[in-house]
Figure 1 (cartoon, rainbow, N blue to C red):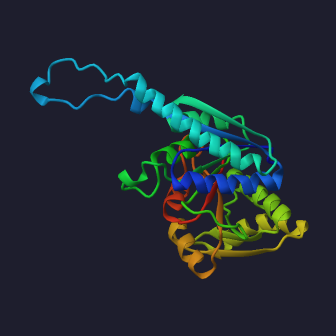
Figure 2 (figure 1 turned 180 degrees about the vertical axis):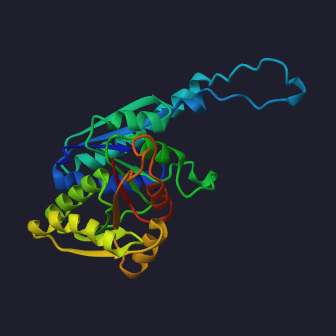
Figure 3 (figure 1 turned 90 degrees about the vertical axis):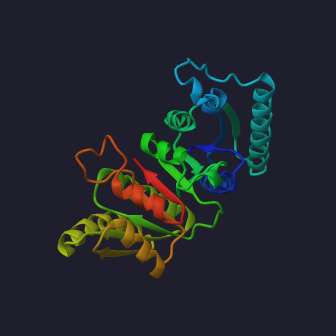
Length: 278
């Protein structure tokens, strides 16, 4: 049950898409919505450009002038004002927050008191990066103890979900979230297990069937061989979906310490919203 949603906002297209997805989700569950803008202290305490002829001299950090800080705050107020206006039109309860810190840390820490975190895969400085996934999104995914919905730069209606299932505890929780979403919004489910051993894969998939079939939900099931990220991408070409739902960590002795390798590869390579469940 989703009763509260934290939405990370900035001036990017990804953040605007995150807001649209969050409103759809919030309307479905009648959830409380909170918009969060993080003033990145890394931009407020930047080292100056260094002159290497003075390599051995101590160089103090640059102190950002007060007028620059004021501009950051004005910007945050404008963005959060637009957020509040958009949510208010839906009738959902809404609040806004401005915090200072490293965005990935702040979002993940605040997310602990919410049911879902919604944010863009990339931020407003995406054009300066080469990676397909922003560092803040990756940091939140690694740290979060709350489900995280990472979205692309354009929102789309969710009519079908691809659920990756490996039988791990996070995958089971992801399956349950998918089932609740399907029950409320008539979302079709496709459950996929990736395993090079067909018999083991079918046994794993049987666990998902045992949970979903008594609920009477529209669902299909398949087992495919190969590496998960490539198999998922290949599968989506043949049978498109609107969102991928998966556990943050699968079966691994380090599953409580790091983001799962498969999870990281999928959220980087699949051009769809990805709901990561811890």
